[in-house]
Amino acid sequence: MLEVSNLEVSYGSIRALHGVSLKVPEKSIVTLIGANGAGKSSTLRALSGLIKARAGTVVYGGEEITNLAPHKIVARGLCQVPEGRMIFPNLTIDENLRMGAFLRRDAKAIAADMDYAFTIFPRLLERRKQLAGTMSGGEQQMLAIARALLSKPKFLMLDEPSLGIAPLLVKSIFEKIVEINRTTGLTILLVEQNANLALEVSNYAYVLETGKVILEGPSVEVKANPQVQAAYLGI
Amino acid sequence: MEQFAQQLLNGLFLGSIYALIALGYTMVYGVLRFINFAHGDVFMLGAFSGLYLNRWLGPMMAGLHWSISLTVIMLLSMAICAALGILIEFLAYRPLRNRPRLNVLITAIGVSLLIEYTGQHPAVFGATQQSFPALIPANNIALTSNLAVTNTQMIVFVTVIMLLVALRYIVMKTRMGLAMRALSLNPTASALMGVNNSVVISFTFGLGSALAAAGGILYASLYPSVEPFMGIIPGLKAFIAAVLGGIGNIPGAALGGLIIGVTETLVGGYSSVVGLPTGYKDGVAFVILILILLFKPSGLLGKTEREKV
Ligand SMILES: Nc1ncnc2c1ncn2[C@@H]1O[C@H](COP(=O)(O)OP(=O)(O)OP(=O)(O)O)[C@@H](O)[C@H]1O
Ligand SMILES: [Mg+2]
Image (cartoon, rainbow over all chains, first blue to last red; front, top):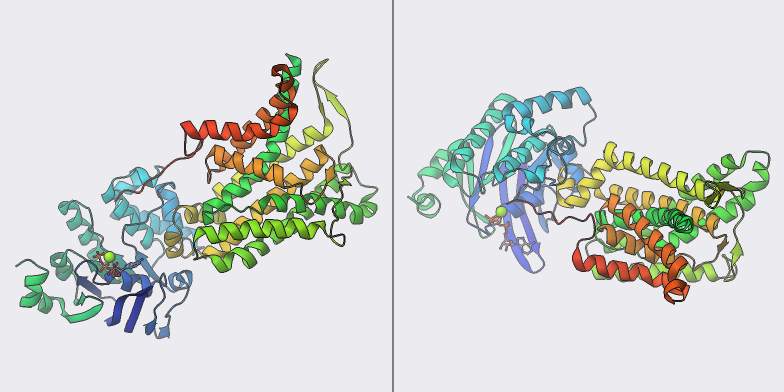
């Protein structure tokens, strides 16, 4: 479904990605793990068109989308829950969700999807009229995911959904992600610091180090790799 | 007492015009985080549009009720200035979108000077003052024996209220308004929701410029003479009003406009009592600004929001 070849990204003179290639098949969950500063978020930002790729191509559904404007990429069904959530603090929960559905005009289907989001994250329903900035960090993460779901994505990128969230809640958020993938067939590219969890829920994994893919394979194999166990799983 | 009430009323009418202009500053700041110093000149262009439209269309609308011709001229001027505002952003500011703020700020000052001095050219508006036509027939409405408002003041007030209601509707109830608010909170996030930020920015410039044009016509109806530099002082005061209310905050800009208008008029009316020349009224806006910002650095209704991490 998504194929990235030799993606290169720089910030001024700083090279962040040195030719990253990866594939995400339809309906799968693929994870991208790596240490701080490895280039995980840069990869997602480039896929969403937020930063320009200096070289390389991104092909999605057979079409090249390299360096398209972000709103055009969203219009094709590629959505991202960005690092740091980026919810709109001064808008209500409802308005945040409506922003998620910004490109859609089908009021009935949007209402149905809102109900679906509320069944996954009932906490949001209780606070519909509340300003998003007044919610706890975990609640904001739920909102960020729900907001992305409202755009009816075909391909969802999640950048560290577990960041700053209590372990128990992390587990439940991951269960929801897997549930969404199973029931709707949504393709997911998951970036995580918590490699253990990411390798558990995903089908395939890429390990990124200083802007390069150093290892890839089915998640079970990557998880069993001694090098990965030492560096990322603390075993 | 009645003289005080009269001053207060006059101040409210003037302040409501400042409020209209201030909204443009604050909305543009909201989406781009910079002060569009050419905004006062769009206000001037609005007044001149009114002047010329009346000259050209006036004869055609001779038989119509004044309220209709006023509405036509007002709406056309708003449309013209909306287009000019969008054009200014497109030509002058958009190429600098990812440059340091200071570059854009200095460009805005340049655009402002360019408009003012181009306007001075005899082939454009000319440097001399021109009298603004009475689009609203003069008439005093007596409220009490000593308290009166003019027809023009009433129309100014009613128009401003209608425009504020319309603006509130656009910002709070429409899809474009939602996108404006989202963009001003986080442009990256709004882009990730599929918003074409450039379109929203153009829309914001258009909206702010249309309000400035309405302000220009109303101002020229209250003080019926126009010249290319007429936007500087009202523009500056409206900018202060926007900062006073909390830059980026829409109700704040409206409130700030009223405060500046009322204090300016009161100082103008009473400065002789304390032995100050009335000319000091123009400086008062700055004194209020400094005082309020000393105690409330983010402005009266400004908030410093922080995202939880
Ligand atoms: N805006 C920026 N300007 C300059 N350098 C940047 C910028 N953003 C990221 N970088 C650099 O690019 C490299 C990759 O950063 P990136 O954010 O992609 O890492 P990451 O893998 O997501 O790390 P983390 O796990 O900490 O989120 C880092 O060396 C970082 O310092
Ligand atoms: Mg990151």
